[in-house]
Length: 430
Image (cartoon, rainbow, N blue to C red):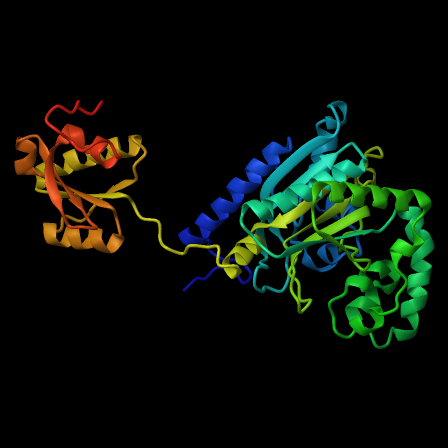
């Protein structure tokens, strides 16, 4: 029997309802901040990611799904959203629009990584990118948007981790000091981190490997090696966050895993006493990325948010109702002549905004009522040939088992919550 490929899953109706809830919140919060939605293609030229994300990143080295199409072009399934949005910004001449250009997306991402809770090889991500302006207030607005999404979903006990990794010049001065700290311990640290030592040494600071973590202690901090300009920018970002009333924690070891970041980086995580934190949302400033992919120097900032991670956190905090969503009304038909009338009534109910379905299968009335009870619907409407001849149907309250006959033209209003039917009630509009 076929099964979903490892690291993927079928999103079943109960889980889809949670995703829909998260999606509705992110769309509304993005709208409130002036973001328009964009949908890049699912695959891009693979070089876009190697140049933009960085050759030494895990994404490019280990995780991208790369293939050659029939025309011989080397393509990759989208592993992250920022490079694609920046490519679209350049391709469509968005630098000529009022800046910043604010773009948002909800899209599947593909990474060949070890599956675990909240982490899949195909996952859906919400992201925002604000391009064309470098301003501490914009950095704070981006982080505030992520914070408000979590707040609107009801999540509690989260903390925003922030840091500055400075600009390219800051890192050129800092990295030799960092290498000098780790070099005596190269034989003891994890092999993957040993490989990063030359190409991406800052990644050793946020390694989660237990073989590397003891040597993070005492490492020089980038925040102690910022230029006066970078330090002033970081201070301005913190002032803006303070003004917004957002609780944050400075984390000098926070560097993020992609090469394009500069200055502000951040993560939103559960405030776990154990320190074993799952990143819900992460991002930062990337003022050199558009230049790396062939455009002019253009500042940018954004974040990516794993919708699956948020769904898992909602569940862990008891904020998910797993009760199946059932129709409000099930319509039972008695006799072949009643079937078409039952279908027509179902259509009227749906046009009135009431979820309704038929008790399919031509079963007995007893079996149809049993089905309606198991389904958990609020009402059952019994449409029979004899009642139709008199212009009536039977409305059964499934909670109390009380039932009464109503004129066919009155039942939609009754179910919709209108006043109980009387002889003087107006007919339902067709």
